[in-house]
Image (tube, rainbow, N blue to C red):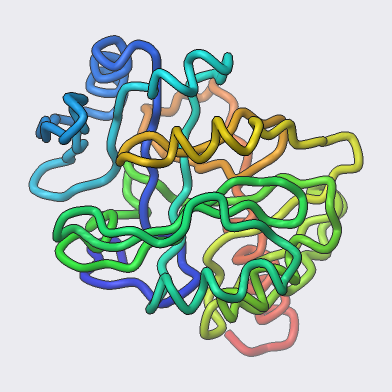
Length: 265
């Protein structure tokens, strides 16, 4: 369902980029994906640039906050997960082994959010939609098609099960390594790759809190965390190599092959 009007709890629903070169990033993604931008002034004087593809909102690009820049944070994409009630979800975080880095707060009439760290230190935003549901177009060229967590903490998937009600399913594919799918109502919404070599490096708590007081202005530099895959339609030639398949595609292929073998198709 490429066009979206709502998201079930636990589903990644938005991404934004915080960067030290907002103008350069906008020019790059405009050339790569054909994005156009709607610049929204923020109360602190910053501009939050909503990225549109046609008539649909697909992402955003924002300047890095002074606090993050002073802490040496690199430019990074942030992942948002949909919640029905951000207050209820945030109330589950500490008991599930995570931390509430920024308590729930309103973003004008767009929605309400909190900023949390999972047990492995990966940063993620929880988004309760009001007028802004998140991306209104996904799984199309120029949009987000997959979100996944890279972590060194094997308990991290259970955190998302407890806080958001996701379920998990191991993906049995030797090319993927220890990969687990996140499921909502039986549908794949993302995945997590557990790698012992990945270690999160979060900012000091005081820097994180001060960075999170405005929107944009959240996240931590990290060697482990959430990442988003965006897709681009490119011409293929006989000599060109095929792009690597995403976990969702691999899972789909395997289910098709199993169905065909069992005579279900």
